[in-house]
Image (tube, rainbow over all chains, first blue to last red; front, side, top):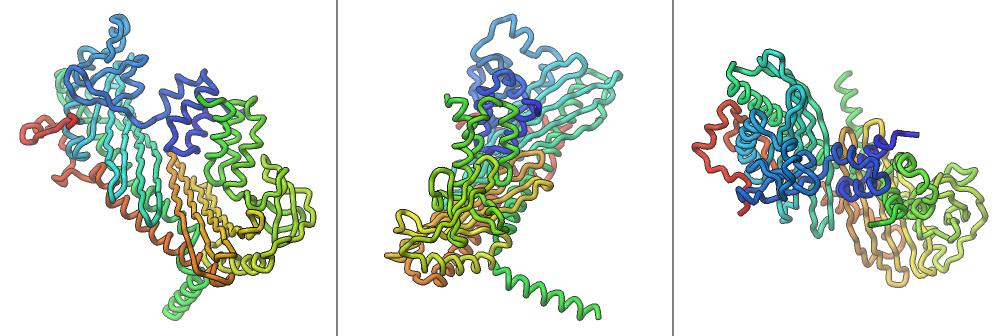
Length: 277
Length: 268
């Protein structure tokens, strides 16, 4: 019998991605023992919350969550507040928080340049060696003649620094959830929804000897890796959503009558064989 | 909260084309005791998805639908004039019996069957059709299912056409549904449907011609819809490059703030 956790992931990879949240709840109701593992490994569309202190929006995921409270990257405070003892473990301080602030400022610029709107958030936490983090983007467009759309990207990072702090090893797992839909009189409804996940690893140098330089180096390295990955995944999404899906429909049914297509092919072969004569 | 039984039934009914057995294996690994009584969900899946089965001792595929259901797990095939039983879980047919076509539209059913079969091979490289008298013999159903499975390349697709002809008024109403699933390191699903009303054709040849034309028009519109989404909402979500046409200079990212008004996700 297959491992239940693997079976749950396989099932979520097959069932309609537009219902991943509902299906995830359904699987957890069947197998409450898998709840924690599933919530930390299945990406669902991000939700937005308003930071009461800064008035700015931020994104919520399993990594800035404690129970039903979420930590704002702008204020570094949980909303609703959590007890002081838990906060001690969950609220980053010192170096990690400094890098988190710089990362949020940097991806904010990146977001404006690439998304021209939307919401971004970055969260970092210390590991025994090195640190880990997540960078999130969300952008939605309301339904209009060109359709409705939603993009959620989730970039999970693990960073291991070399002993000398002259370089670091970065492991990035990125998921983009892309939901597109169109309603019109000519096709009634077209839904293109889903998610793709890709991984990459890189060793990158950290310039400078001062702590501040190393910290700035991490932020730049993370930013560049996220930028490369998002650009690569955007091209991949374009291929899968608009190339592959359309090709499969064309494989199922041909607009051109198949007998004509066969005649065209025969004529083409004829031309080729005459050229080769 | 839905019951566990309702939850797993919904998983079965939402299984992508060609992946029912994978979905069922996952369900069994997750909830083996609840997975014992999936029969109604299998029946619903098979009837809605036009599952095809081979008749015992025959190479011909026959599709299963609510339109050729006789109840008690039995269905009929108008071409071979046979009825048969389906095991909905294994999708196997057995217990074939003679089932003479009894319909006041028997001639029409036969000529539609012939014309629709011929017309479908002109557009579908592989498909199964069925023409059945239905609705207490007041209508004729024309059904088509085309599947293309490529699990080694992580994609599967299904096209379903459903048309109901009212022979008294020669009106034809129908639905086209297309499903595509792509799942290499991800899960992408395309689903589309289109309702059609086709009037004024009479005679089998003319009816199937109007179907082929309507399906061609739909497919051309669908191709245009892909372009609309690609050029429209997809482009509007994330740019390929910033307006500056240059990648971000991460070392100088602080400097970007000086010359630009960064909105910063502040709600408007």
